[in-house]
Image (cartoon, rainbow, N blue to C red; front, side, top):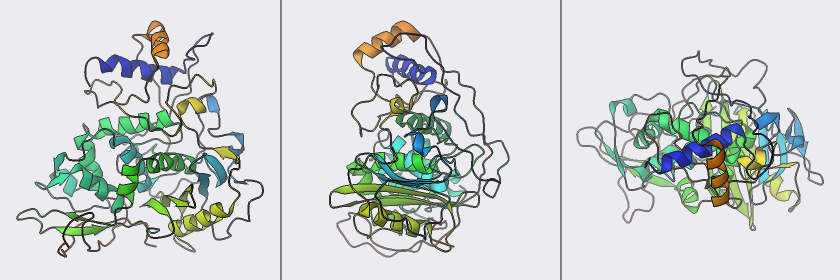
Length: 442
């Protein structure tokens, strides 16, 4: 990070960490310490006994409204009956335009996200990396756990292709390579957590860029919907999520090249804007998606479910149909917040820009522990107050890990097809070793 940007990032982080009320009188209030991931802790291979812990925002507030402070189901007034086939323990349906939550079950339960966490990876890295940059594959990419797109050491892959591999085939090797391009896994995970905090996703704790479980890693139906809502506001992200086919390049002596296909189970359904599956033994099946019909956009997340009697994606499809049948324009039983300021118990003057604008992180810093993400632009007046108040303050948040797990995604076959956006019909190629998204499997 350039020298002139480091103090700004440090001050922005200090403001978020201490809950300083910019422009108001009275003392600063320290917000509760965020949980953190602990890769050194044991990694269970099943969901936590008794269900996931419930998350909350700064000071114990319920992000999105008090009606979402429930482990049960809440539904907006005047809506049709919920589909009986929706059996997931955690899910949420929201209007992506207004942010109104139409219905939810255990919205702030901190479930294991599995590969749906890759949506946060994409949201974090899109502003940071040049799509034309070329990343060379490594032995570590080849050996990564779980689902892989089949990168090989010495192969040369554009960042834009790695983005496609990340969301189309849930490539953990692509996640590893993208993190390396952004400054390393530790830097990327720190940026992901700062991005989550900046948008108000306080139930989310990233421990890996891929979603492989580590102790303390989590997200919630609310947070997955919050992240995916941000993604589908970006036309470039929607183009990535909807890419049907892409081609991995040949690597002389290692791979003849092959094609990958989008494994979003709802691709091709009416108005679908993209989806991301996930599966680990600890997370079970997770899914997040969005669709647009008649000018109205909905986002749906499903967590902690099984493929019998219905897959996570099929339950999400039922919830989308239900949501589009629900009254438009409702205030909802809660709302998806637009920024971290909306989740603060102090209701401070918001730092972010207009609602719906994705926070743009600064380039990664060196490994001196400084913030790698400027959550949002500070106003001139706010910056002056902050400088006068907290200059020199560094973030020192004590973290409390939660017991979560690390389990690989289940392997799946890769299907051939033509590359996305290519001017010529591609050749069919055999798939490389690895696995695609496992969430379409039992």
